[in-house]
Length: 97
Image (cartoon, rainbow, N blue to C red; front, side, top):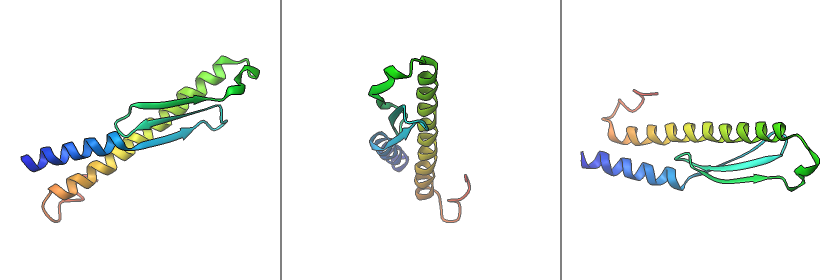
């Protein structure tokens, strides 16, 4: 059991330290999230006063953050699979794919 909790802690630390970056398709905003899905940074283009449509900006922000979170989910699954592979007996590492 000690090995499992050590691996869980190692995985948590890896995910906390991993950063994923996403930019909106129109370049209006970008965000950075951690592997543990915390928003670390959000940038909005400085020239947005010309747009005048807050709905467009709101949609861009939501879409960008959601895509970054999806990337974080994939990273969590990938890293969890690695840890499981280390913990399971030989031949069982692909059991949860």
